[in-house]
Length: 353
Image (cartoon, rainbow, N blue to C red; front, top):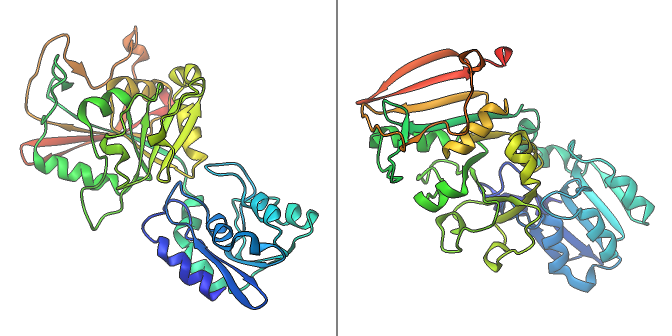
């Protein structure tokens, strides 16, 4: 188990908001397989270890720092792979509060299960994960706009509305969230990295809503500098080869329903342990999230510029409300200067919705 703990540390900085997990397979007092969870969206530690052990895993013992999963999420349950490999005994260090039924299904299939081995040492590995499980979902909107509320001109030019100082602050904000989300049109036009642009700050998981899977493989979102989740229409069965690799997670939803209720997207991301979501555009995505009552707070970076034009892109798209009485209200509004720009922050008043 001590070796499994050391293996788990190799995933540090690459798997959050998932836990660090290490695993070994032992047979006749010899380690025949090693593995760890290498990146968010990648194979679980148990799967990597069983692959390493191969056919020799039959009747062997498996040591893992966290209780094996027993549900379908990004990957099939590890319990199924353990049973199919013919593992005789499973030893885990820490019970996963986000897992149920693992011990029962393993024992029903003839696998002995023992928990608590080096529990205190292994629990240190997952302190961030355990804290994360207690977090409530938070959805924020961040946008850069002109004084008259435009995020792009009528020809979709948006670089750059706000100053470099504002952009740097916005990049730092990303490290405080589990995921940064944009729509496919924004991704195609801007080709963003959606990272913190810093070696010292944690990159969020990148999320793009791409209903028809039209983003090209050369896009920055597929450069593997950070994990990327592609949310697409479940009716779309044609998936390009460049999307079938570790670091890219395909997340099908009923897009017809999701367009009417952004909470479908939020719930899907929650299933990947993503609870803090920063929406960066475009205007239709922002409108959908706001009027689905999914948004908690806003961050509007505003430059002292006027773009004008009825065809310029407003920060909030969609049909809007028909009556002022139906407007969304923002409370606890604050203004802060950032060089020549300023930032407006506030919380959506859900009691008025």
